Length: 291
Figure (cartoon, rainbow, N blue to C red):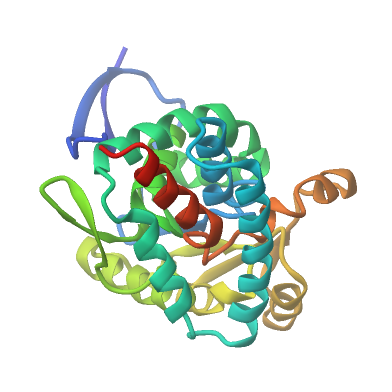
């Protein structure tokens, strides 16, 4: 049996990276990877039903970090945020301030541990099988696959590791001595910021964006979708569907009527997800249960 080498790139909660691993295999058809090609997947409503931060908040509520009433207010605030963000793209100051309140004082290890637990409990069952299959197709031909999300990069990294993907791009919070300072490094990973981050990663990794693909559900990701050679609308909102038809982009919809109705509220917790009742609830928890 022929001996082959398979690369697995992942990062654990301590930042340790795995590299080459020897495996025994005899592939039926040799795969010649294109080193200049990769795929970029939005997370909320694209890779996952609903929003990762909503399910993270649900997991925190179950652990008594805040109340279910806070969670309901959080979902409503995110509905309002998504409408405003779509109408006023780039006006992210309020969401950025809320993001700071969310992370301030928390230790990175705690957030990553909670993200791992909550992914297994609430997020894993909500991964779209069809989108996961598309990502695997890229992996199978030797291409790298990154998630690109407005969620904290720690949550994105956990999801990517659990799905066997290459890595994640997300909102980055400043960390000093293992704890979040309450300041962001750069801006929220939303809208044009996603396209800029993808372009920067492509330069570092030697990718040719014209040979890359991007997948998203939202018109807010139009900058990222327009950056690559092949854009695909997954479970698209109405505005993105119109753009996809105008541009001749592929459209894939893995939703059903019943399922869409069931996840309507969670799906509103998109780019500003780091806001509202989550921040208030965690602040209250810290006052009641100081570290």
